[in-house]
Amino acid sequence: MRVRFAPSPTGALHVGGARTALYNWLLARHDGGTLVLRIEDTDRDRSTPENVEQILDALRWLGLDYDEGPISQLSRTERHQEVLARLLEEGHAYRSTAAKPEVDAYKAQHGAERGFRGQAEAEGAVRLRVPDDGSTVVHDLIRGDTTFAHVHLDDPVIARADSSVLYNFAVAVDDLDAQITHVVRGEDHLSNTPKQLLVLKALGAQPPIYAHLPLLHGQDGKKLSKRQGASSVQEFRDDGYLPEALLNYLALLGWGSEDDETILSIDQLVTQFAIERVSRNPARFDHQKLRWLNGRYVRELSVDELTERLEAFTGRGGLRGAVEISREKMQTLADFWPLAGFLFDGPADDPAAREKWLDEDGRAILREVREALQPLDPLTMANVQPALEGVVAAREVKPKQVFQPVRVALAGRAVSPGIFETLVVLGREQSLARIDAVLAP
RNA sequence: GCCGCUAUCGUCCAGGGGACUAGGACGCCGCCCUCUCACGGCGGAAACCCGGGUUCGAAUCCCGGUAGCGGUACCA
View 1 (cartoon, chains in turn blue, green):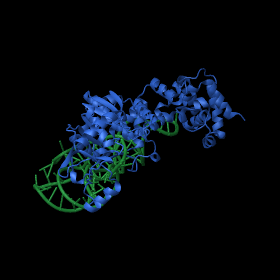
View 2 (spheres, rainbow, N blue to C red; view 1 turned 30 degrees about the vertical axis):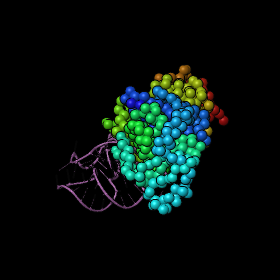
View 3 (spheres, rainbow, N blue to C red; view 1 turned 180 degrees about the vertical axis):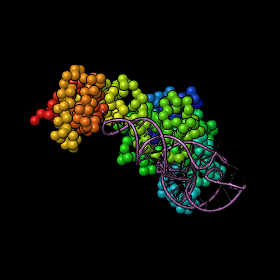
View 4 (cartoon, rainbow, N blue to C red; view 1 turned 135 degrees about the vertical axis):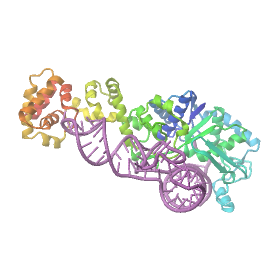
């Protein structure tokens, strides 16, 4: 089995493209096949080295490796010209200056459902000759057979007037030469497939097996767009998502394992993935479910591993203690700093929290807490907990009445990791200093 | 407009002639746990697009309608 992922470098790799890459990768790895990476850069305006690098970077981060390539489609110009000349010579294609107005005029005369047929001319773009009768059937692993009657098909333009080739031609030739056995790509290419099949037929070549994936939509059912949150792989990385979680989520958009599992490691995906089980329905991208899934993966990481990733993500060091007491409370790496940053940068400033918990009563309690903590050195879970609970017991109040003022004194806000843990991680000196800062007149 | 694809809870995925009282997950609601926020546990509400047909029997097969999406470039 030989499969390929063939993105066009128009900018960042979107999650739809990432899913196509993933499915191809899973198919190849499941089968012991070969994955070829090809860059479809025949559109010279949009294809820049920066855009190509963005795609490679995204694939690297996701951990999707490939066995051959990247092959630049543009670099195959010579071969394309050779095949184009052959098609022209054999009469399978012809030059025509007909453009949109001519095509429209043709349809006005013959009916909108009739495909355009041109006359051979000495110059102009190259069109492939589509037979008037019969039909081309696309055999698809996911959708079954789709029949395209030739009468409805326009003679497709396969090369510009300057002979530079177009997508539907280049893709057919490149897949053929690379001996691709399975073409797995988005459903937006389904209508293009008969054109490619016709090119292959004119060449007398055996077509690959096709599988067209359902499209990915945004939460509103429309195209994915920035307005609905992250949509490119880079954005998800910057938003603190783990590649393994994104991969797991993407795998589930358009496919489900036989036993209906939700959490699937990459290894499980490789063994369980089956292209025949891919859904035919377009899927909407649900950021909330991804967040939840990411949280599950965050909590599966060891403290060391999570610390490493968070230090890389935040650019700060010495995070281990903070990570250990915060991991239950975050879903993305980006959640960490708002939650635990106070441990390093000092208390946050939440006036509402201060007003509510650091009133007369709160400060009175803080004084008692300070006294209870004073003799403890160093602070440990074993000595901090009884100390604070002693204050609760002595005062005969709810635990919250004691813990919240302490929390606000240390964190500057009403939300933080567990209060005992926070005291221990902060240490005796810092803890007392922050309490004193509140009690100071 | 024309050509094509698709149609199960709000969302994703199961189920593909009788096993359906339609299953799982996210989200939502309630309860429990609890020092905050979370995590975790338990429970609940929530769907077969509409109309015909085939059949003893249809969510499942067929046809039509509707809706959504894609293609219709000298883009990919």
